[in-house]
Amino acid sequence: MVTLENLPLLSAKNAKGYRLINSKLPPIHLFDDVADADDFEALYLLQARTNPRLQNEVGRIELIPKEDIPFGITGCSYATAPFTHINPYGSRFSNGAFGVLYMAENNKTAIAEVKHHQQRYWENVEQLHFERFTLRGLVCNFEQEGLIDLTHLPYEHPIYHPEDYSAPQALGAQAHQQRHIGLAYHSVRNHNNICWALLTPRVVTACVQHAHYEMIWDGRKITSVNKLTRVL
Image (cartoon, rainbow, N blue to C red; front, side):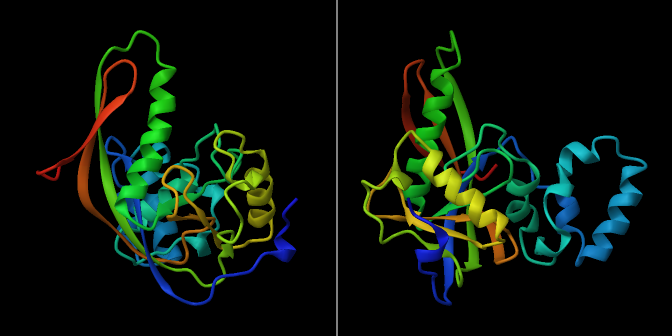
């Protein structure tokens, strides 16, 4: 079993990661409207009095320390959202108890990762014969110093099992408890490419939209992924 004690850490380097999110999820403007935690607290309390939907928009803000929110950067809401709107079903490095910001080193890998998980989701929707859904393409800059490096592990390692996430979730829980920044690992859906799982958004320096994509579900599988020429 792999443990944190025998894993190397990445050295200082500015990195760029790509991710796709469902376009029905709008940016949380409250994060982008303030410069620091004090401003956020004051504005949040003020808006909470007049906006009954604020809690749904911001999410479970108690799940992330205020000092981890990168206030003042471009796209703060995109960087923070995965930690306040958590997938209760979990993911590769989380059992659903905490959020993770997943990114890939290139757009092709980000599409491959999202396509796989969307395929699994739509397979469980009964009597759905066609669906077209759009995704925002994001590009994020971040500092990778201190990330746990799993890229030396072979694809046969349990960390990379295509379906059983028990090993990576156990490692992710340990890393989250010890306040590690995140993990670097091989993409399981597009081999020979790197992905990152950030356990905090505080190392993100910018996160901006660069494109929109659509995926087409024909009732059995996702048949195509198309880049839209017009940004929505």
